Every structure is written in C-alpha cells, then in structure tokens.
Image 1 (cartoon, helix red, strand yellow):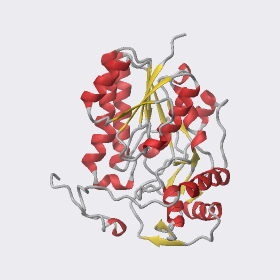
Image 2 (spheres, rainbow, N blue to C red):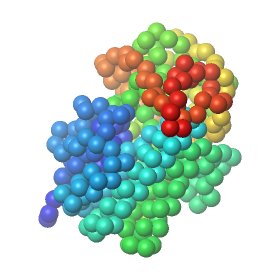
Image 3 (tube, rainbow, N blue to C red):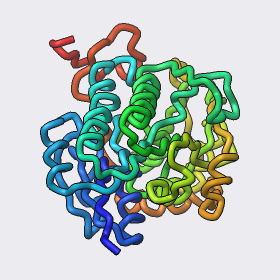
Image 4 (cartoon, rainbow, N blue to C red):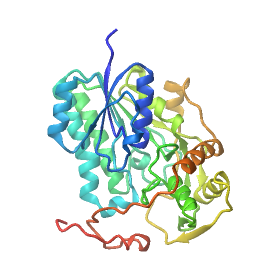
Length: 342
C-alpha cells in the first residue's frame, strides 16, 4: 500500500503538532506548514517535513501542492483570538478566510486530494444556542466566527462544484501540552497558568460566570487525524470536545489547584463575548465513539500543569498592529500600535 502524504497546516502550533503526531503513528508522510507566528519549531514532531511559510502566500501553497501531490489536507492553522478579532478585522479575514481559500483552491486544482479536513470553531454558533448542535443555523457574533463560517460554506461549495470531499470539525476550548502560554489574547487556561508562574493574579472578564466545556488535547487531535480516512465522516460537520461545562471561575480554581497554589483572581471589565458556549456530541459519538476519551478537567489540567512548570514562565506577547482602537478594552489599551493602512 502506498504511503499517504498529508499536509498539516499549523504543524508547529498546539493542535496541529498533536495531529501530526497522530498521522505519523498511522504511517502517513506528513508535510507541515507553519509561519511560526503562534507556534514553536520545537513543537514540530520528528519525522515531519517542515516548511516555514504562511497559508496566505498562495504561490507557496500552490508550490507545495505541486511538489508533494497531497492525498489529504488537515487545516488547523488560524489566529483564533476571538475577542481580539473585532480590532484586527483585516488580519483575521486574511488569515482565517483567505488563507483557507488558498488551500481549497490548490486542493481543487491538484485533483489528488481525497479529503480536506477543516478545523473550524464553535464560534460559528453565536449565543443562546446551548447545547450547540450541528443542525443549528450558525449565527456568529464576531469577525473570527464570521471567517470560520464563511470558510465552511466555501468548502461545502467546493464539494458541490468540484467534488472535493471534506470534514468540518468544530472543536472547543482545547488545552494541553504545547499550547502557546505566552499568547495573552487567547487560550484562557494557558494564560492563567503562565500568570501563576509569573506570580500574577488570574484575570477574569466580568463576573466569571461564563461557561465553557474545556477539552483536553487527546480528546480532539486523534479524531481530527482520523477524520480524513473515515469515510462516514466525509461531508459532515462535527462538534468535538468535552461534555461537561464549567464556569470560568470554577475553572480558575481548578487551575490554581493543579498548579499547587491558592486561587488569586481579579476581575476586569466585561468584554463582548458569548456568555454560555458548550456543544452537543451525538454525532461525534456516532462516528467516532470508539475514540472518545472524555478526559476529566482535573486530569487534563494536572498533565498540562506538569508540562507548563517544566517549560517555565513566558513573557506575554503583544499583537503587532491593531487596526481599530475604538472601544478597545482597557486591559488591552497598553498595546495601541495601530496599522497605518487601516
């Protein structure tokens, strides 16, 4: 049997690197593409053919498809800072929509891609739709969710027009080893753990009663990696993640416990975000029931905390250029570099 060749975008990032691990274990030849804007080269698993570059570079994307003649594509690369997306709208759409379209175009032109798996987001659902089910009408409430939903639609249209098989995975609130704990705009568990290492209080937006179901990486990456070859998943939109929602305050207390410290929490101004967000998993149980682990939050946090303590504290990042500063939250106002092209 010929060894399949699979492109993984975001292979130096959190989810992408774990997906690459899973594919290597399945015997795939893996080509990883990442611009290292949010990932780390030491995340890339040994055995991956790594290419530094951006999915927004359509010439590079086309060159890779011509060179490697991919059998499968798993697209995990994204800038998933949902709350920040209001203030970096052009950057958001270029990376999360146009970059995806570049990959879809190349897949259609090449004609050898058997399946394209797109890592979307539960941000497409919007608010007041819990538990979120795949048959609900998406109502995204921020540019990040808009971009993800638009990419989903474009992928479905590429299937109708050109026969490109696809799977859309909507993971949610994924955490675990290799997460970028220096990113101050996304991945709340990583932010909290990094603050604890730096001796800083955990910062909660508003009252902290927002609810999310936090999903350990081993509940997500194996399903994404298997989706390209599980034909009953082709053409499906699938929620993937944990079943049990927690409030941000509950989660903060669990993080403190996992890190071996007393909770130290301060409250910042409320930001514009969906209050309650967790999803239904009937479909993933039906298609991938043999793979679901449902790692408890306390167990996953313990594993991540051990890794974070080994890696050590990181200096929080600052986004390069805001495009809009109007109505910017006070806690981000220190980062007020504005794009001159805005």
